[in-house]
Length: 142
Image 1: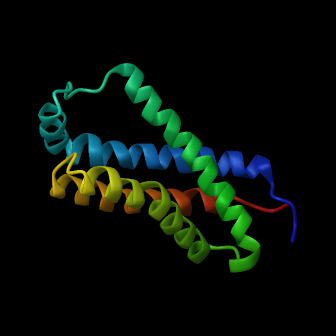
Image 2 (image 1 turned 180 degrees about the vertical axis):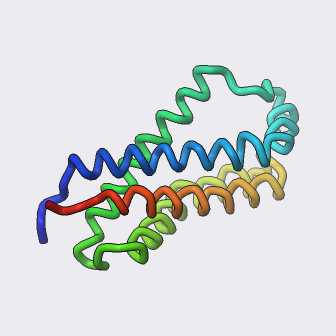
C-alpha cells in the first residue's frame, strides 16, 4: 500500500466538490426550488437563501468533495482503482452524509414533506456518485 497523494486528493476533491455543488444547485436550487420554498415557509423561514448561506453551502460542498476523494484514496488499495470503487465510495458517502441525516432529521421528525425528503435524498445519491467519479478520475497514487 502506497501513501495517499494529498495533492491529488485536493485536486480531485476540488473537482468533486464543484461537481457536487453544480448538481446540488440544479437539483435543490432549481428542480426542487418550489418544494424548498414551501417547506421553508412552513417553518416560518425565508424561502430565498442569503449570499452567506450560498457561500456556506458551496464551501461545505468543496470540503465534502475533498473528504470524498480522501475516502476513495483510502479504500482504493483494497477495492482497486477505477469507476467501481468511485461509485462505492460515492454510495457510502451518500449513506452517511445524506441518507441517515435526512431519514432522521427530515423524515422521522416530519420537518419537511415526505416528497421533498425523498427527492432531495435521491438527488444526493446522483450528486455524490457523479462527484466521486469526477474526482476519482483525477486521483493518482504517484
